[in-house]
Length: 255
Image 1: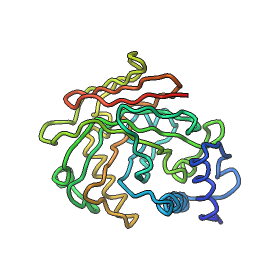
Image 2: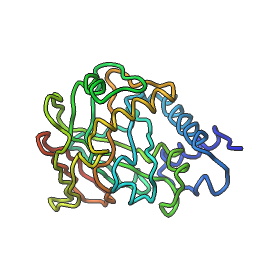
Image 3: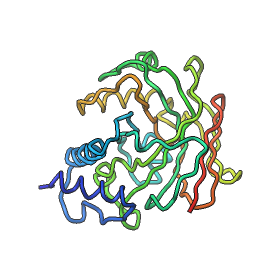
Image 4: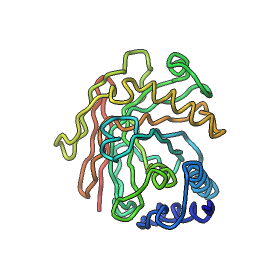
């Protein structure tokens, strides 16, 4: 039987100290309920250190991402204030184990969104949308893990950065995007990769959050999931993502 608190301490310490750990599934038996319990407990440790809950991230919402990770299940993770990256500012790669970046679209909520909702209801709860990037960082040795391992490790969520916010009064179902390293295009995609429409990711987020007893709150940010496969980060890299109609978001990576 999984020791939830001990496993939560293991993944939390790994993230905090940027230290690779063996797969949890290599020495304990976990089901998905256990994995989400570990995730919740590990985020609880962050909250106890003074961080605040600021939203939710969705994972495996694009076919490219599912293929890259060899998985097919949609998953989610919790976002805290300690994960916010300053737009345009540098980050230190030494704070991460296997850092990767993926382009996303982010939602800012103006009202609570609970349970099984329609896309129209989801849109009505959105204050604004923004171009965004999520820094994902699996803490597992050799970047190998089971689905339960990923979920326990907060679905690999480690940081996120958002660009300028825009009113959601236009069609954002198929916005082209390009993610570049030092001006060289690395990833090209579209928001249509997110379940055909990013709002479907928000609908799923509302359902998952409600099932966990943590319904989406006003002021929260929902990261809709990677619109492409993720790209590994390296030092001395200026990372920029430009999204049609929404503009740019960027940061730099130092050693």
